[in-house]
Amino acid sequence: MGDHRALFLSTIFNMVKRVNEKVLDLYDVAVIQLRKAVNVLGLCEEAFEALKTHERVIQVKIPVRMDDGKNEGFS
Image (cartoon, rainbow, N blue to C red; front, top):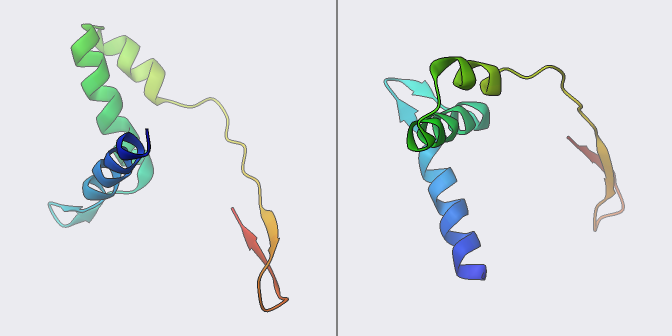
């Protein structure tokens, strides 16, 4: 199972590249994957638009105590 996860992560990181001088962020990668899934499933354009648009965002910051004793927040 670890091989599948490594392949998946490798695929994602390979997609986060410069495309026409634009650096793709993870949202862009997710939209690309969604587009592929919509095409495979044969869904309409309205379904794609509804699925790619989020209604709300939950953002959290997790405090982590580092090895050197400092606290650092990750979001």
